[in-house]
Image (tube, rainbow, N blue to C red; front, side, top):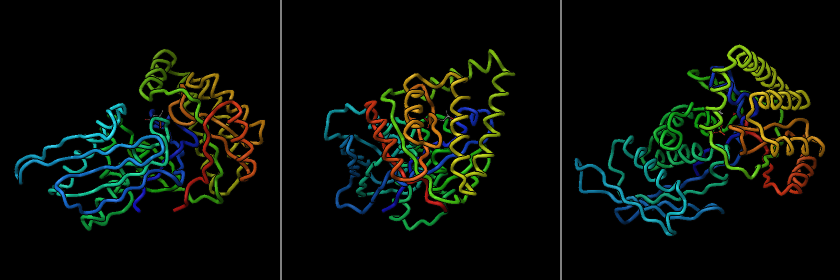
Length: 328
Ligand code: PMV
């Protein structure tokens, strides 16, 4: 079943916006999609995740060249604002195929929550492109799949850097730098990660703007922080390659301190990181936008990952243990 992977940022969020590198890792779960020819002239999208279930029908207008007409019907009331984005995203993707995609059924299964900084939307976009490619007999590599999914991702994130989509398609650990091809890293061993959700929904635009304000006010100090983070990212990539998990963990924790200096951490995220370290994590940090959202902890092995998850659950936090990226 075609898949797009979810992701975590191991190191380098925010400084990546200012041209520094970031190290991301696909997390082995994401979004799976199946597309198949259907009998009726409509497209049904099943969201079969635990958190949402809806069917979106996309009806088509008359025969080409009449423009495609779309309509949205939901099994449930439109309580999920993302449904409208999904409809627009699908339309953008289908239009980019440049052919009339009549009578398709698309089943979409989300394994990661949306809005948590885990790259759910990019994973869905990549999986849909892969499923449509199967139907239309199109073959392309991961980079081209990521590129083809960007019309979808732009509906969700306006002006995305492309990191999420590139990692969603590669399923790998990789260095991302704006404007450059994704640089895949061959991991020397599995990365056992615990993801903890702070329970606070935050917005990428808000924290990115807050960092921009800080940067405008204290340019040299902020640039120095970005440079230090860039150095951590380089060292972390080397640690991933050689499987030096202890070193990677220390670099992640240092990155968290620097993100705190950028004021994107919260007391809740700090508390979760501290709890994870107490439970045996090699390192812990917020991941993604901050201001809420998720943190990650690197565990030396699976039993420790379970202990870390249990510790975070005692703080009433939702957790997920992921086996890290599948190496390309
Ligand atoms: O939206 P998230 O939580 O996956 O994080 C975005 C990462 C940032 O570096 C903060 C922003 C960006 O565009 O790279």
